Image 1 (cartoon, rainbow, N blue to C red):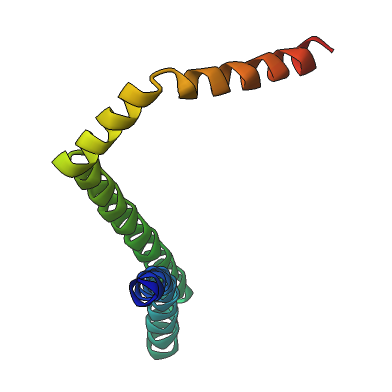
Image 2 (spheres, rainbow, N blue to C red):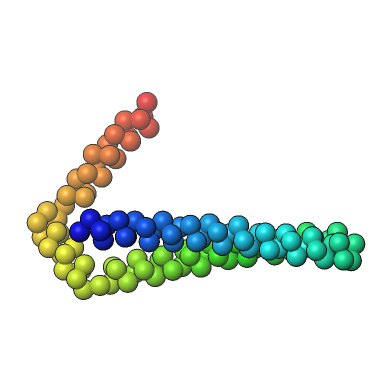
Amino acid sequence: MKITENLNDAVKDANGLSLAISIVVAVLIGFFIGKGLYHLTGIKALFWIFLVVGILAAFLNIYKAVKAQQKDINDLVNDPKYKQYKEALDKENPHKDYDEFDAIDKEDKKWDEA
């Protein structure tokens, strides 16, 4: 079991690292293309245009990663195995979460009134 836990941690770390690398690479590609075109043509605006394109590509990579994570979460939510597990937990203690949030809300109201 320990091997699979370590493997899961490694996969999660690699996924986060690949996102970070793709962000940096997108900005660097835009930077170097813009710099190269500036040296070839002498038009400074090309440098800034391609730098902005690189930054926008980095944001697109982040957007795609977030969408992929949302899809994975929705797949887990809709998985019948996990639905049965949630239903079993709800039957054991249906108001557990609500009681916990009520205590937190009461504490927040104390600070709001002060």
